[in-house]
Image 1 (spheres, rainbow, N blue to C red):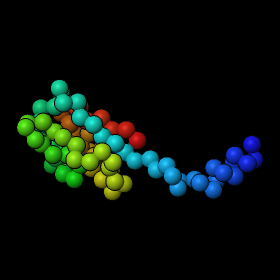
Image 2: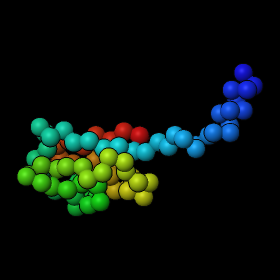
Image 3: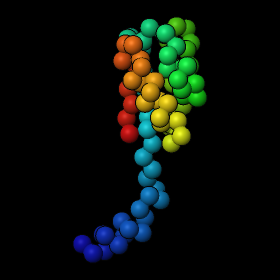
Length: 81
C-alpha cells in the first residue's frame, strides 16, 4: 500500500491531464451562432449547424465554453470534464 502511494505521488499530474471536452447534439442545434459569438476559438457555424473546432479545450477557453453552453437556446452543447 505504501509503495502505491509513493508511485502515485511521484507521477501525479505528469501523464494524465483532465481537459474539458465539448460536443454538439446536431439534431437539436438551430445554428443561431450564440456559441460561436461567445467562444469563437472552440465553436464555428457551418451549414447552419455548430461544429467543434477542437476537442481538447484549453484552460483559458473553459469559461467562455461554459458561458456558451448556458446561453445555447436549445441546450445542444454538452461539456465533460
